[in-house]
Amino acid sequence: MTSDSEKSNWCTIESDPGVFTCLIESFGVKNVELTELYSLDDDSLKQCTGVGGGGGEGDAGGPLYGLIFLFKWTKEIEGKDDRTSLTGDDIPADLFFARQTVPNACATQAILSVLLNNASSSPIEPKDENGTNDNDAAADSTSQTLQVGPMLTQLHSFIQSFPPDLRGEAIGASEEIRQAHNSFARPTSVFIEDNRPPQNDDDGEAFHFVAYVPHKASGKVYELDGLKGGPILLGEYDTTKGDAWWNVARQAIQTRIEQFGSSEIKFNLMAMVGDKRVMLQDRIKSAEEQKLGGIIVDDMKALLAEQDEKRTQWKRENDRRRHNYLPFCVELIKGLAKTGKLNELTEEARKTSLGKMHKRPKI
Image (cartoon, rainbow, N blue to C red; front, side, top):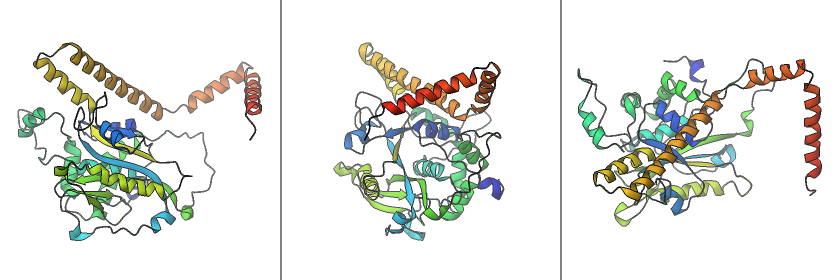
């Protein structure tokens, strides 16, 4: 467990699919990834689950577990939100919702809201003396099923009976979750002193994450915002009529965006979907077993190589995010100063900057 001071020490993390995917994998989650959405149209929402070639959920795609939306939270706009937050017995017993009780934890809480509302109904059992359990065979036969892993399974089991505020406290007090979250903090340096005054919250502006998830048992869609008193029921969908749950969520997201007007563009939307590598590996294996071979398998292997390269790029970017470049910059400047080149390069950079400014078109 963490102390009160440590519990409040959560950093802000970048809204990026590579960051979020690597974060949830550090929790022990398998067979899932985040993908960024640039549009709310039907094709974008369907294709985000595909592995290439325009596949949607009914074609080459997999499940869409939930949506995570980043927006600028303001007191003024939130004060006008008259939607009812469900509390007490009005919240479905199997719908996971936790209040956000520590600053800067909203990204991880939104992720957990999606994960724990899609967790496997079969709990992970302890391994026997042979290192196996009854769920191993089932996991092998459903390689594309979202698996939240032992750590989140134990946390979910422990806090499921808690009220939303205590669930939030338990998440904030989890050392494993906090360390995983903070591992994506941009490094700071003792050489930099921030003499700026503390941020004044009177303006009531901050960036905030919320989650949108389907409740399959009831055919309803909920908005899960840790700053609210409870989940917000958005509407219903009927899969027997071909309804998609994200159509309900899309309306709520569009309404929120429209509240800001055309001047605000700082939004980000990500979808939690199945791991595309796992889907492709399963399809390649199935095609080879059916002796399809040829172009079909070669195309899928090419798509798998693209997914592997994407993961390599994510790792490279995350390594760069974590690396502290300041000592290198300081030593470089010191080295240039010793060789007498610093003033010359500084003046050259100043002239280049002025030249670019003069070339700018006048308005």
